[in-house]
Image (tube, rainbow over all chains, first blue to last red; front, top):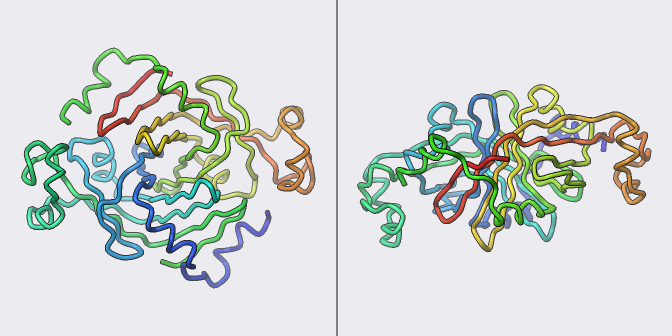
Length: 146
Length: 146
């Protein structure tokens, strides 16, 4: 177990195939910080642009968006329960309220959640940009490059 | 969706039966804060004392324990993926290194993880004490008393 802290001192490996597969998970756990406290919420990935850019549909009036407005630090945790394997990406969350971007992301089924449609003032898009990663498997963990 | 922020202004409900059932989950997502950033990790609940006290086996040399040594703020997220239901308890994480407590928690199968046995200097116990709760279900969320 003493090896755990040394991963950052050696050359970091790139994402391996196990990790890349896990990034396909649609429901992820998203972390925010507010007032020195950590918060977690399950969220649905609405779109994945690359291995380090993920989008979520969210609400301007929500607690979580209020957290990221104060502090954009964020993490996204991908979790394969049967395999007891986890991948945490850390980075920043950007709150997007640009109408052109919203129109690109909008799907008609979203009307059930945002009654005002694509111009609903509560509708916002969250863009997560990962800058580092950590892989957890069988009581071991290792940082990797994103 | 505008109702979301008002839950804290009215009398908080107690835990309902759905929430109590979810607290039986053995694998949970645990949140810590370090250097203004949120971190998430899946952890196995080793023992549950009540609806607001949960124990985990951990390592004195781990990143997570280093976070809680600096800042005991913690959250534990219980997640029922098929039901898209989540429960977040927020509170504090205490790091326990008292040998008597360790002996009470120790099981022989743990030797595979802590090679030095119950006196392994890397072995520690984490005690999470929840002070508040939030319940997420079908795009709605509500605080509750713990």
